[in-house]
Image (cartoon, rainbow, N blue to C red):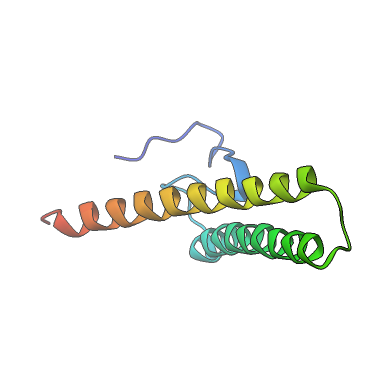
Length: 99
């Protein structure tokens, strides 16, 4: 059963297409979204590391900025891990389906 609006593929956020829409690069788009998510998480972690190093070496006196960077990095990592867990759960559910 294909449920699409009369005009074709529904518009979804992040450039994703709906399930029934024919797209040659659907997996490429999903991969790009995941890659952006990983890159953003990595950037947050690197920024936190830099802030801690600057505070430890005396280049910065702002404990507030350092703690803010650490909190952002922690939150980004937690969200990333939850998304990863949901993707793995969805994959396992699909693999359990019988055809």
